[in-house]
Amino acid sequence: MTIFVGNLNFRTTEKQLHDLFAAYGTIQSVKIITDVFSGHSRGFAFIRMTSSDEAKEALRKLDSCYLDNNQLILREARPRTQADLFKKPRL
Image (cartoon, rainbow, N blue to C red; front, side, top):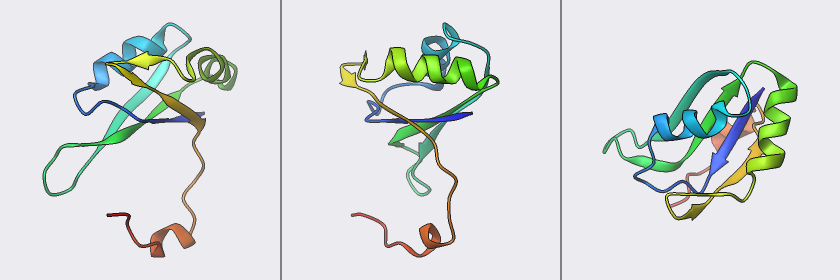
């Protein structure tokens, strides 16, 4: 199961996210999404966990927690659709 993590502080690292979520289960991957041109964080990430039950527990326990002075927003990630490819980016 993959978890969307929003409202990240731009200084938050993948290691910090890994350490936070590892308390709830095995982490397959952590990916902070970065801007293509600048390489800076876009303020959100995806955490892939091996167990759906562990991921749901992490969602329940960590939603609205604070990391680097920002209140995290957690949701189950949804797959991208064809329509997502044609959406205009928010500026």
